[in-house]
Amino acid sequence: MLATECLGAEHVIFLRQLEHLENLINGNGSNAAISATVATIETAVDAHAQTEESGIYPALEPTLGRSMGPLAVMDAEHADIRKTLTFIKGTNDKTPRKELADAAKHFINVLREHISKEDNILFPMAVQILGVSKLGAMAKQCQSGHHKVAPCCHPLEG
Ligand SMILES: [Fe+2]
Image 1 (cartoon, helix red, strand yellow):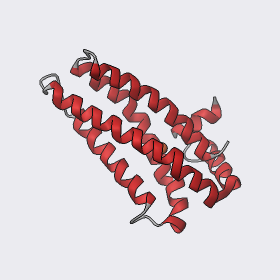
Image 2 (cartoon, protein in one colour):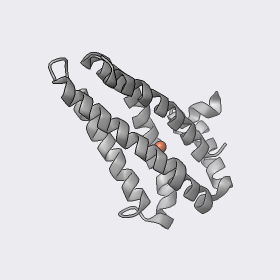
Image 3 (cartoon, protein in one colour):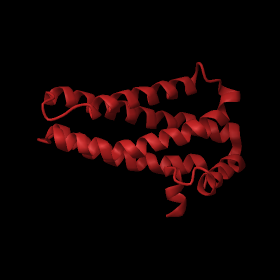
Image 4 (cartoon, helix red, strand yellow):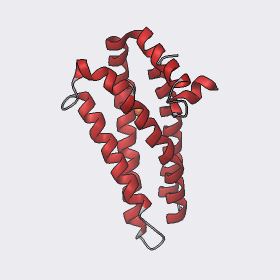
């Protein structure tokens, strides 16, 4: 398995969770239900982002640069996602539902677009730039090395 496939497998799980969150927002989900659902997604999304930021992004940096171009866009989206999650964490049952729902919808939209860009643009570029042997080694290193608890290891272990 390649590191890109490993991360892509997690994207599939995130997309399903986002669907569930969207149904809660569009239905009668309470603030508590929305916040709790976001909280369950948050830990995995943050660990996933850290895995990318310490693995595939730096590996692509010599070729793509970091201050502009695709990696700069990815970094900005990670920052946007984290900022939105921090806002949602600070809400409570007194927060106007629309305020929480708008923040959760923003989280859904940014994460969906981000995943689409990685799956359709960045990861195919990574295969071209880094090659399958490097991406295979990165996945193995993730499984056995200091990133043992990183989420992209789970599909390898499963
Ligand atoms: Fe990702």
